[in-house]
Image (cartoon, rainbow, N blue to C red; front, side):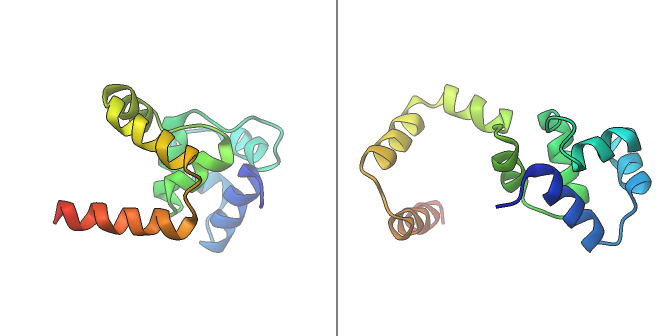
Length: 113
């Protein structure tokens, strides 16, 4: 798996966006973005990660995983909903497979509908 900086650069280049253009759109300096892409800088704060994801048309959760960070909105939700944390621990402790997690997700979507 690629690291955070490589992924950002790859996404930016795939969309034919320049470094300066991208940095300007997300509100950071081109030098800072360059350091991020070259892994000379730690991944940025969550709000910058979200803006990057939006600008680069990618899933912010992918970028959060690569940055070893968690979306603060998700953290807040987990803290506010202890039942969700209990469910996650159950899934982890029960060693759900990817297939079982997808089935659980589909079941959750059907409950919501």
